[in-house]
Length: 219
Image 1 (cartoon, rainbow, N blue to C red):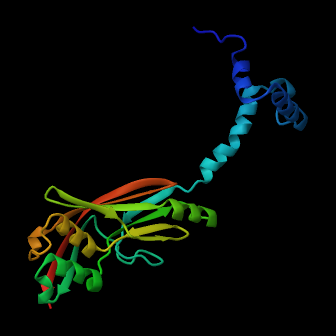
Image 2: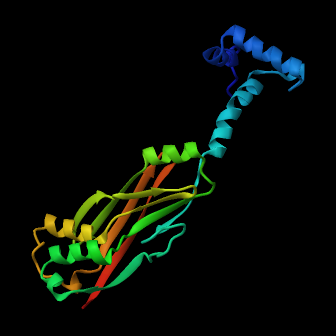
Image 3: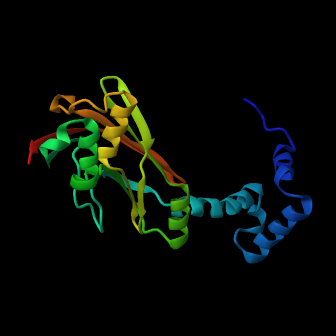
């Protein structure tokens, strides 16, 4: 078996403390009776110094849950299924092209698929501020091997978590614009489309994968 070389712990000690600092902490522990004088060693000191870091880790907001949400106020008013179906009404003249269709959805039917994330604790003002500054949310809208990506424009932070969202009409228009099909007539056979929502912030990151299906009737 390997034997510990003499001075090995002492060498590690010198990497962290000066001789004066080490003896000062040692004397404090003996006088304060945190441990018995004969038991004071480098590992006791190292443990005590690590306590603030352990405390910080325990108090850092942990993510409790995340789920699809189309509308959020004080709670999720429209929780989405991973494979979500939207039913809308559209004037006949708004079905001439994907451009007209998408912007009708944006201005009138207003579907806003999003991701809601809750923390396991109530956030302090400082934690909320850090969350707001670091929060990034994005989406991927994919159909038939073709994909468009973008930032989720809507971001709302509260005491319990955050909600990121964007307009489905905008995603549809961007997709068809990038694939040069914006002027084609909308067909329901285009759906379902894959939807992936991703978030990242100072406290963690994650994503949800699902799909959206849009069916409509003519007004």
